[in-house]
Amino acid sequence: MKARGLKATLAFVIAMAGLTACGTGGDPASDTGAIPVRVLATTPSMNTGLPLAMVALGTADGAGLDMKYEAVGAASSTVIAGVMSGEADFGVLALAPAIEAIHTGAPIEIIAGTAEVASLMVVSNDVAERYGNKSVDERLRGLEGLTVGTGPVGSTNYNILRAELSRVGLDPDKDVTIIGMSEPTALVSGLKQGQFDAGFYGAGALEQNLADGDGAVYLTGKDLPTIQDMIGIGVIGRSDYIAKNADSVERLRAALAAATEQITADPVNAGEKLHTKFFAETSPAAWAITWELGQSVMVADTKISQDAYEKNLTLLAAGGSSVDVPFDEAVAEIARKDSE
Image (tube, rainbow, N blue to C red; front, top):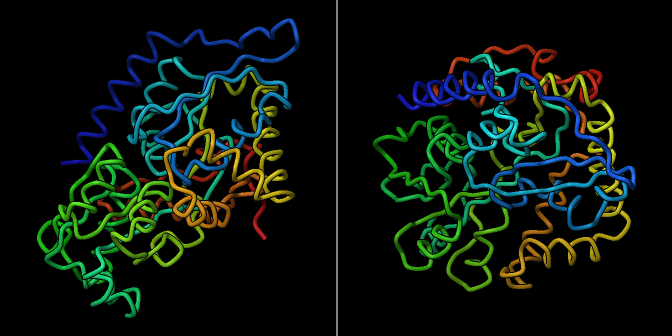
């Protein structure tokens, strides 16, 4: 039912895009030569850490882009709709929903991979004491009968959680109460107040619970077989925009690459700028945890291998969505990594 609802939404978006954006062309450069581009993104977290760093470090300016970057919420479907309608030139989001949109006929392509999945599960201290030292699979089984807050229904975090519970033999509809939330601050407060036994979200939110002593790290995305080695976050554009605006695409990719270079050269300074710009309400203690995990998942060359791409198909299948979009149909040539 959830898959049908998403498909219906995307079908509507595609139809509307045909009416509103079929004439999309390039934006003229400013007097300084900078190209104006509009970027929509999901809620700031370390899943979108590299594009956020691009903004915070000013590498978009350095690459000759006059960028307007706007975070519009946790749902990737909102970003897809914005790109499809022509409201935005590029979208930063989880790739699995983008691939599902392509499957339904959306004329969009992936022009950069920016991160593996930097998700984090924080549990109450009681749950951590009972299961925290056990194997990954035993920790997942330890969630049986508990309430877990995560991203909204259909989001990547929501689907990862369901896939991993199913993998260890639990029924995500019966054995665990999963509550999808569109606002990450609600997860932080819910865990603090005991409404949730656990929270699972992109790094950049639940670390506050760790800093406040409300919980403990239980799992990270790197622990979970469903998404290991998957490039799950990236940038999309409409196919017609990409074809007409190769310079904009090249400059955006250059800005992302320059951000990774600055992070590698001086991670402390880069982290401070990112913290100030997008995560100022996160305490320094919590930010230290966030930044360490965020750096570990960033994709330096923004290219995607076929294996890393197909992990997204596996995730979609685990969530009950039958999607079979070829690698070279979904990923623009400029973003493809040659198989090794």
